[in-house]
Image 1 (spheres, rainbow, N blue to C red):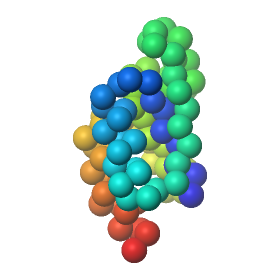
Image 2: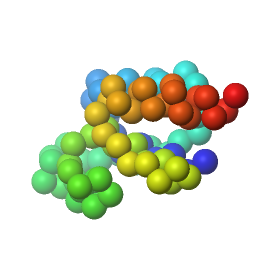
Image 3: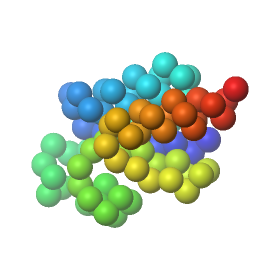
Length: 83
């Protein structure tokens, strides 16, 4: 499906997104990022900023951040597409 999640271990916002993806049985790859914002060059390259979580949906050409926005996208777009 081509879903990638950039996340930081122990980040509660990232866990919210992980939970939503798992709850809806969405296949995805996690790319774990460094704790220091200054070392998150790959996140910056793909999203234009260094904060996480960031979700990339290659199939739909979507890149988004903010855990609540991602959760809604998972529930309203990705989960619906599986039905």
